[in-house]
Image 1 (tube, helix red, strand yellow):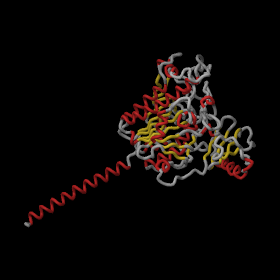
Image 2 (cartoon, rainbow, N blue to C red):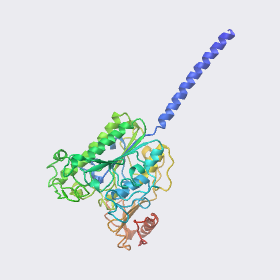
Image 3 (cartoon, rainbow, N blue to C red):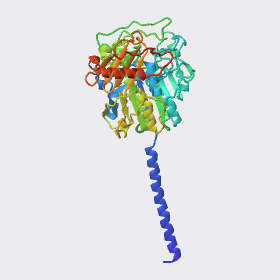
Image 4 (spheres, rainbow, N blue to C red):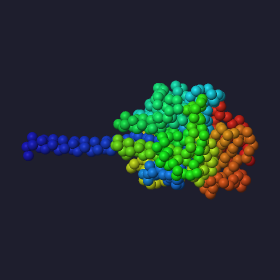
Length: 495
């Protein structure tokens, strides 16, 4: 063979090797990129939806097919807890990864000092607060919240635009979120007047408006990772929605429950609840509408071609309410549990949670891992490969989602509540300690329940297990840090 021919052959071989190597490298790089693609995150938070208000957990008076479908496509958490038993502190724990002994907002007040300090909005989170939205924004996410905020009046440091959210549309004030035909909503810093709701008109239904804006947000940001915090106002009081929705259930839930509310005057559309003659039908219609909107969110993800790279979480901010004609007893809204909203018994804080993540989570699976709202932030951090923030109480539940390795467990869960005379609860393993009326009667004895045998918290076994009571009482003392305006100024009786 001539030297020139030999060189040519060698040259061809080298070129082929380079091409093959390049192809392999490209495939490896693509595989790496696919493996490390940051998923979209859609967090759907219902408002005052009870554990028993969804049909997959026993509701038999109406159906929630879209929420139920999530359970067949993802993982059900059977031992999940809200951040608190009312709206604002529950949402604060979700945003900060801190339980109510540490999170900045620990109650539903306009001010820590004066409940009438602002015409609209609640006491604000501090500028120094670090939220899950800020974490995601720092890591390349578009961030949006649609629905009810309640963590800082417009323009304050607690305003959603100052807490990591690129876009906000909805109610800033949870008091005004009592009304579904409001005079205005907020789009970022713009007060959006709803002209067709002037006076006593009821033509622009806020949950429809907020839902439409959430769908638009997904369309706009479909090419990059996004975090959609869908903070629905449903099915919170008041029990109002378009009449055609109510008519579908009218006469089905007899005897009906009527409610005479505020239909004019100073408090009309300013936090007062409107009247409803068909409270049962209205409540069923509101949960049905919530379920329909969940289905539409999932359908939009599919239409945009991003469903397979999106984590969808559905849960509720606390237990069911009994205001404005709502009837949790009739609907068995708290399921097998004792208590409702404002209780620290299971019915006030044990909430549904379902997580869907295609090709990551085993379909139709469930976990009994004990988790709470403050676990969301560290879970997100681990999912996107970000450093977990310091000074948080949450534990990532990603191992449970992926069933990949041993799941770290909480030493305990802690709640404090500053209404109704002050209430504290601790769960450690299967033990649950509860102390009510702590501000008025600090010497009141602690109640103790074994949730493995008594999930309905019927039998107080404190006298049988004094050492357990003593241990959990000490946690009640040590789990919190002082916070001006949210004080428990006493030592808990450990008897």
